[in-house]
Image (cartoon, rainbow, N blue to C red; front, top):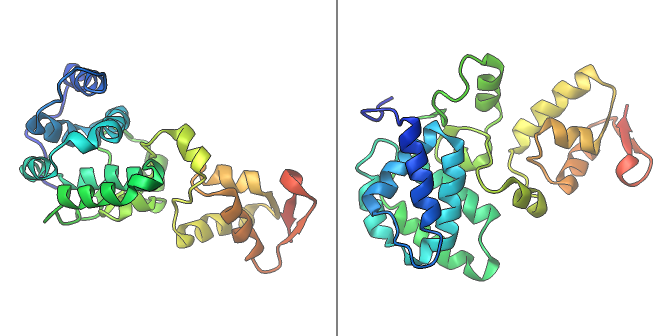
Length: 229
């Protein structure tokens, strides 16, 4: 895995936070495309920077030259990081009336950029927590998989993600997790299933998943309903 010549230090990350947050206030200039490309690379070392970067893009994408940004991010080893951020915005954050325009803008930004080579998205943030690393690789959500990264962190506002009630995990991953749960427990509620998937499935889809399990029957009504064999 080729990478950056230097890992960003805390002071550099804080400076990136400040530059992106300042640019969201009226009357302030944006970071240059060169700086934006560098900050993008640093997202792999710091999820908080990813959250701030997404908020910056949400507010300012119309005023950013997509081809200038494309040329700069291609100079770095991980231009695919932008693809992950744009996927999350497309699904979780774009107003319906502007979705097509944002999608076209995103296509220009990602022009001629190929997916990565199937690797963990975040670098050094999990330490030696083998369980977390295994979950990252076994339960990646589709925003990461589309660019061949393994990750499950929702960088878009978690509150808005819950409001949108999106399903981010593939049917295969959901089936495997549900099979593991039901091997240890003979009954489950929708809320327990959603919690096991860390909120990355809508309630409606969770109910469908439970209804598809052979022999599993739902008893009760509304949120107190429990599925058991």
